[in-house]
Length: 231
Ligand SMILES: C[S@@+](CC[C@H](N)C(=O)[O-])C[C@H]1O[C@@H](n2cnc3c(N)ncnc32)[C@H](O)[C@@H]1O
Image (cartoon, rainbow, N blue to C red; front, side, top):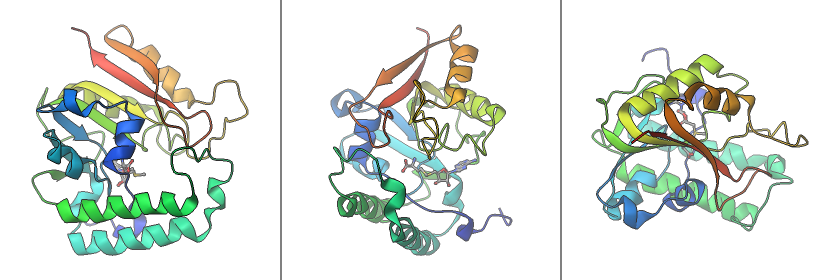
């Protein structure tokens, strides 16, 4: 891990409430289920999910760093993100209501994540490899990595990462399906082209579906991809 530097990363995370919206989660149905947040970043999904009785864990490449570094870089990342919020122009603020409130979600996630961060629940992992056994989880949630950075993460990385998530999980949900610039916003279908490639590759072996969710921030972004082992 000597080649990784904390300054290479913007450390951000979303809250449990945001995850429930991204992934249509039903906390009651998830009670007692094993759920992995991958990559977890500075998300507070695990913190709150455990309080709901969900057996939640997270994996991320940043979990090799000590808490002091994550705190400092996490706080600096929030400053950087809101220095020039013009990137949020045109977004749908139905959920967040305002930019200051959007920032409060990031701050809350970071605070709860740092409070909860421990070596057991938060494991260092470098996709497309995950340090868990086959079928270790009932559900794997993957937010804001795959499809979002399709300009720098290629199809092979996407396929290998999703197959690895399906090795360890009975079901995988991915959100969002569009890139971080929403560069295809003007097109009829604004999903990353990799969404279709993934569906083509997996649909015979797994149950695969694009499902609407009750959340939109990027325009046209209110969909997740759900992939399940056939029963
Ligand atoms: C934008 S954050 C999303 C975090 C969280 N899922 C959320 O929605 O708040 C993306 C995360 O992906 C992690 N990441 C990037 N490449 C990775 C890799 N190859 N393996 C594991 N984690 C990776 C980064 O460290 C970062 O924490």
